[in-house]
Length: 395
Image (cartoon, rainbow, N blue to C red; front, side):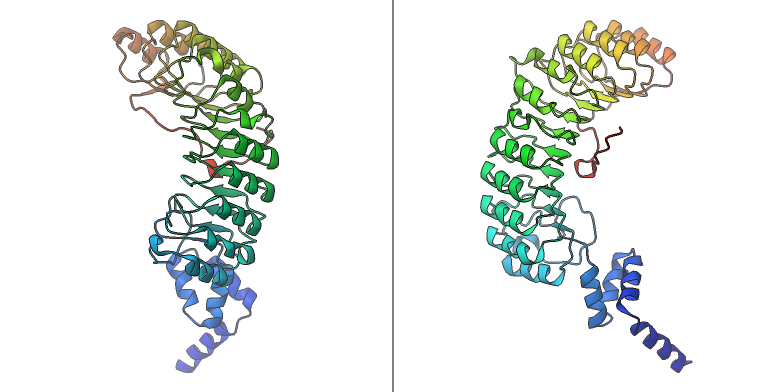
C-alpha cells in the first residue's frame, strides 16, 4: 500500500506544467494556493507564474488574496523589485497604504509591469509626478488607476494620459493639486474613459471635461468648486449614467444645474444632489424633464426645492425607484402628494420626520402607495462601485 501511495505522489509530481497550472487555478482557497507553492521549487514556480493579483495587508478595499506579511510602512524599492521579479504576470497590484514608498521604486514597473491592468497607489504620499511618469512608461495597458490622496499635479496627469491610452477608471479623489488642465489632458487623451472620481479636488471647476468621450458614464465630483459652465462640460459627452455633485452649495449657482436637463444627460440613471442647498425649482424641473431614465435621485438637504419642483418630479420621473428627501425644509404635504400620485415605479422613499408633513398626509401616502417602503435613514453615498462600471451602449 505504501508503494502504491508513493507511486501516486510521484505521478502527480511529474504532471506537465499545463496540468499543474489548471490545478492551481482551480483552487479557490488562499490556504490551498499557498500550500501548493510549498510542495517543491517547480510547483512554487507554477504558483508565481499564475499569480494575477497582489496587495499588502493594509491595502484599502481588498480584492484578492495576499501572502505578504511585510508591514506597508516598511516597503521600499528593494521589496518591490523582489515582488515584481517573482510575480511577473500580475494584472492587479495594490500598494495602497505604503506611505514610505518612493518614486524610484516604480522604475521596476518598466521591466516587470507590462501586464498590469490595475494599479492602486492610494495614500502613497511620497509618489510625485515623476513616479506617475514611470507608471506610464512601465504599464502601457493600464485600465484602472487609483491615486486617492496622492501628491500629484497636472503634469503627472498629462504624462499618464499620454502613455496609458486604454485607461477606463481613474480615481483622483482628494488630489488637491490637480486642476481642469490635467483633467482636459486625461479626458482628451484617454477616449475609453468610463469612470472618474474627482471628489474634493478644490481646483476643479469641471471645464476640463468638455468634449469628453461618450464612454464616460460615471463621474464623482462631490465637494468640488464646480461652475455652471463646468456642469455643461461634465455632461457634454452624452453618455453619463451616474453623477455625484453632492455638496455643491455656492449661493451664486442657483439655476446652474439646469444644464443637466438640456438633453446631454438623457441617459442619466443615478443623480446625487445631496446638500446642494441652493438648487432651485427651475433646475429640478429641467432635470426631471430632461433625464427620463432617472432611477435614483438624492435631494436630501436641498432646501430650495418647493411644490413646483416636487410636482415636476411626480409628472416626469416615471422610472424613479428611489428618492431621497431627508431634511428638505420645503417638502410639504402637497409635494409629497405629487410624488405619491406621479412616481409609479417608486419603491423606496428616504424621508426623515418633517414638521411640514402632517401625520394625515403621511398615512395617506402609505395608504395609496403601500408598495413604497419609507426609510428614515439618511444615505450618504449612492450608486455603483466606481471600478466595476462597464460601458454598455445599449443601456
